[in-house]
Image (cartoon, rainbow, N blue to C red; front, side, top):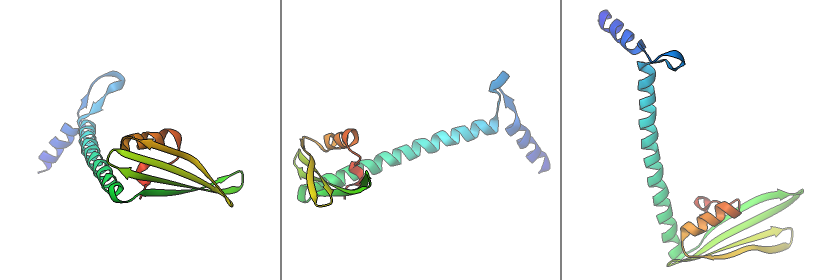
Length: 133
């Protein structure tokens, strides 16, 4: 048994490569395991993301999605409320800004798809579509 463990230790510790790019078999196996784990996690993330978008699209057929963001601008508390409504390939995004007693519409846009809403939110606001409930 000791011979087997010694042989495995030598095999895992064997150095490959030359110069500054030397590596051992053990490090190569760890790298392969990390790549496989990363690929599996990316696949799971894509599935969860797709399912979330489908759920949001179903919700928008009957109701709206909204999100509230509290901020502090120059010492004044500010509340942003974003609402997405629609369905059937027609979505509307409204963003209201409340500062004290003042209410202001900062954005009111129409979109053809939920992907367009998501792109607009990423480019022009601090909101993320995945945070809407």
